[in-house]
Length: 148
Image (tube, rainbow, N blue to C red; front, side):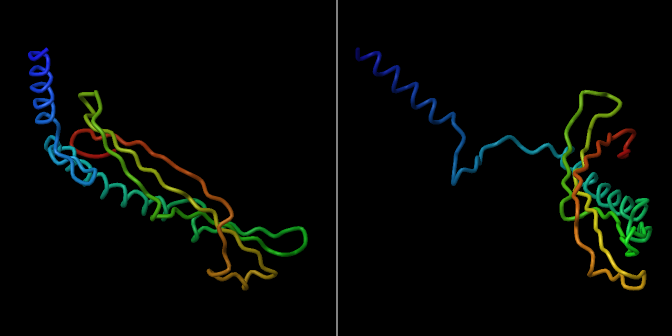
């Protein structure tokens, strides 16, 4: 019985020393961060911001290419799309491919704005309201030193 207590005591002590230190729910003795993955994440964030800006400018239904249609009752309806930059999220992970060692995902919400007026001259930017939100996700790969 005495040897069982000794074995349990030693096991508990070893177990306690093997556990990572925890303070306020944060693990402090974690493995070092993957520096290369962090570099790819920073590069991808820059790439993603540029890509979303480009998508906003070149969207066939952007504010500068607003679609205006005359309704049966003689009024006009204007509609355009815009990507909400504040909703953009990025993720980067390693892949199992040798030719594309990293994969990045951009997620964002595309908003559709709409307004109605009795004459074309009456449309103002502050008259538009969000009528629909479309979630989007794009997947990119890191190949030959660049995101594409």
